[in-house]
Image (tube, rainbow over all chains, first blue to last red; front, side, top):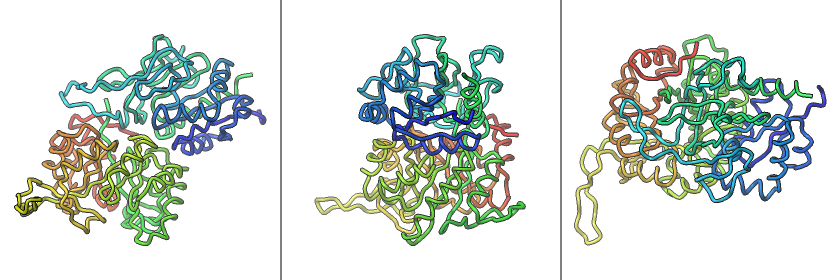
Length: 219
Length: 269
């Protein structure tokens, strides 16, 4: 237990520190790192991200972390990807030229420019603010990271592009913003949230807490 | 769908909140972290901290404030006041701010918005605009020596509202969005502090022309004012300061009232 190592992969993204603070307040002791060795030897990892696709992918290319993260994802060890961190799990993004990690099949696309809601009001992009998250699995089959979180709990979102998964089974939750936005993904040990748990108050901290518990439980 | 956000704004001078909360049993009404915790528990959807520190050598204090607040309160935090460069913005984001607002410096150099949006993403960049109704239409000199009457209904003020510019608020809002701002925080200087309601004409004109989210600021005095800013003004978020600080209205009652009026709200228990 004491030698459990959690790595927060430093993508150069501005929210690294908020993620670290959130993990610490729920009892984690993460290292924030760009070192391939430290990531590879960690028991669990978090991949945060904000900003633009190419900026983050270029950072990962420059730091030679692409293979490191892919290997980590396929190793079965818990990996939590947040916001842009979740988007780069996919193969490509309309936001940039650089390919994604390709851990999940699918792509990232811009919100349609003309989307309306039922009130006839124009929907704004970025999708910024608190929105309801609806999990697709019921409580029994839910991934441990999302277990016990009530349907329609509000989480904080900020993004202009959204994920379109090829495999519907990768989608763990959606939120309504003109379309049903992919709000969370689960693929075995790989979990992603489009929303920012580190900015979603108590509900968000609960996700970091459950991720830690899930990661520590694993052999 | 997205809920309407209710945002208390706190003025910070040399690391201390001024006009601090004065109606509840708070140990230290000047402590930014304590007030942030209080407003989080009240159901605030975000917090805005405005650094009104006059001297630039005291600016580091604001970084400490953001560090401390973001280690305890896990809702989005916007920091503004005196942000002049990409470097200033980076320090605030690294300290734990979710968004940083720019005002005077962006007007002097609109490229600042573009640079910051490129580096940190549009979602981090809030363009704050202080707007004042034009009382007498300004005469604008043409290059041929003649003059035109400006069409602007509202003009931009900078430097905490102390300095008038010839810039049209509506045009500047559009430009800000084009340069990559992710959100607008528009304060009506006419309405500010008067509690007669937000300037819904101003809000509506902007929200009908700009597709990024709009935070309404200045003028809230009653529960219905908050509703009107959204239904009439098209705002995505509503901001108030002293109304909340002096306990004239509680965030919870504002949110309940807005929900009863049919707006989607995040209600916390």
